[in-house]
Image: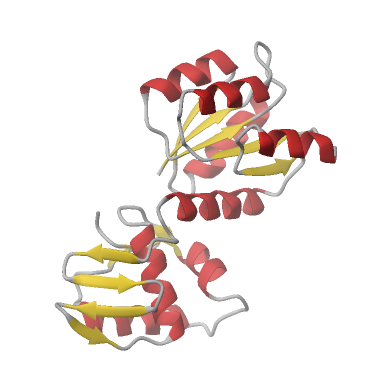
Length: 216
């Protein structure tokens, strides 16, 4: 997944970029509103992380220009402006989420994942991957037209991997999303094994020492 970060603070910008890249995102970092707008117009990031206090343009003006050009990239505002009026103004200008500085990097990543899931069509009623079809409204899964019975954790795990298709999900990312409380030590491996048994070993690839992925 490719992220565009517009943040003028060099220490914070570098810290965010390095943290997210260590979690297998590709991050393009720009320090002014105009540079960020130019990159957004000539590339296709999956999500924009936008500071409001920029040296050339106010972040809200950047956001308004983005939406005026019918660019529907999800936008997460990242700012020190914490007044409720500021949050409302940001959301009304077209932001999808609003996170106030200082923030925890784990929360930032969780919000990024939520926005990417929403943008990738988490709410769509049908997901198709080869011969595998998921009807998300009915929570029904079929392979080559034949119904496949999945437990709740197996279904949630399969859905998360398909929505992240082409990107590695680390064990920590999966456990935070799928297992609300601490899972048993081998719960994830058990569910991965069960999915491979039902859909074939080639569906889910193990990235040794990192996590799991479904090939794009």
